[in-house]
View 1 (spheres, rainbow, N blue to C red):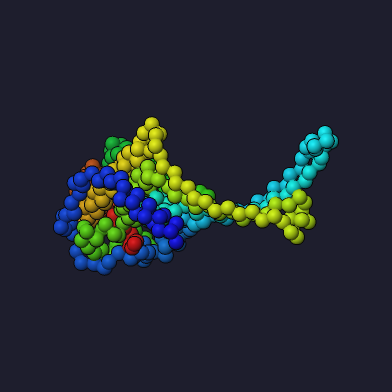
View 2 (spheres, rainbow, N blue to C red):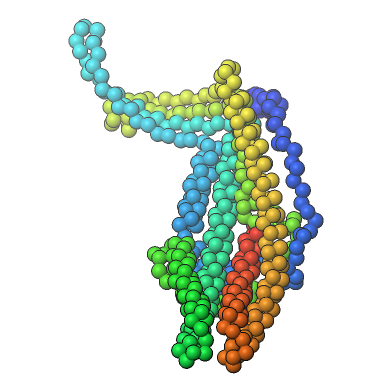
Length: 456
């Protein structure tokens, strides 16, 4: 009882000598009260947000990517490592128990100068336990646990990035498909115009100039087809790699013109701090760095260790098992650093620097999240406005082309007028398809910026 009281008093005395923790740097982070841009009324972001596009092919592709993507699988494998690190740190808080058996065979000189061979056996159980009055091992365990939590959030961030990249790539692929369909339809129209120009030239109604212009326009449109086919093949290969498959064709679902992105409710900026996994990862990494700093600081304080052993000694193994000589010992030790040339204090300063950098990394993650959301909100809103204008232009240029074609067929205008109308109509339709794909991809970026439905 006296020993316990002495140990408790010693621990209480030393606990009052804790080295003060270096405070973190002053933060300059502030949360805006609201977003600058809005997307209108909508529903909260779901976890499987890509299903909102209502495309079964997209659902299958994202599900395959989340299951087979190498980055996602690597992040999951990394979790096993950090889970084991937590177990290692927790083991330091528990007592250790070991068993040993020491057989010895020796030859010594007896009292009469004769050699004597001796055999001895010694077995022992040893137990050791390090007291933690200052919380050093507890801080190490907490740092490991928070590192594991940070890796969990990082794995969620990886999955979100892979899902968003896959969805964006698929929407880009559908946009290229629509452009290729338009190019082929336009090429067929150019072929009819070229045939008409050739017939009119053969009967002497038009000049070779108009025939050459029609052929040049046909060749220019024909060159667009293989260019789009190459881009489609490259996009398919990129999606296959994301999905953990060999390069090859990718299944299609809903056409681009029938894909309608749903409205999204962005919420408040403060909610983003709990909805984005990269912010959660940075926050937990900061907490882990702070716990590591506490453990490094406690390295400069004394450590208390209790040991006990129980053993047996005999001249041979049968005697060891039947009637050995019993041995035991109980002891304790207090180890305090006196001089280490500043090594422990420098390690604490290193941990403080790592904690400060974790603060800055957290602030950067939050600011980047705010910027990502603002950019995505602006893209969704402005691309929709731009798409409306381009759609109106597409309708107008289609009407201009119809009128110009009729005038040319009836001899009221030259082919140059129809040629100019064809170019404008093709450019307007192509721009409308590109903007529609970009508008849908902006919704994917907004889903990613809002955390993709991930919740802590």
